[in-house]
Length: 204
Image (cartoon, rainbow, N blue to C red; front, side, top):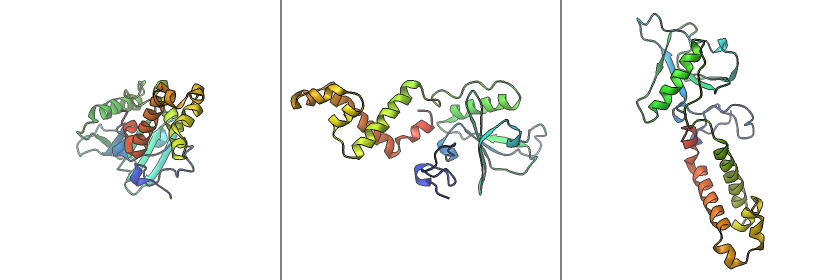
């Protein structure tokens, strides 16, 4: 099955031609993903996790390293990596002590509330894109597509709605706000394409 391991996609992530569904990313790149494994002996009150018990799963894939699940929630999805897949096993959550610790803990608290029938609350800050940031990403993608197709900065500006750019003289265009804006947009899009998109996965 096609995958994009080098770009952060999981081995069984959707192929680029079929991105209509939920994409599974490598767990270490997405700190809202909770890593679950068998609880140590003696923790009799630890609960088993049965993904099928949740209302709707947006994704459910079994791989060599365990089961990867995305649970639908009106407040924001929950992503789980179950390294132990034996039915009925009591589970524990592993939280790496890394720079994303607070995000991981916030995700754990959300899932814990959901698990015990309470409202989970919103996703960690930064995970959900604001309307402004979503719009800027759309503009960046549009500018990048045109740039890679060979369009000039002036042509990109016009395509993105800066119609006045067409009427400027060469001197006016060179010092214009529109030109500076498009150059920044294309530069940001190039950085995003060359690995910067991973910051989005970390809510940054």
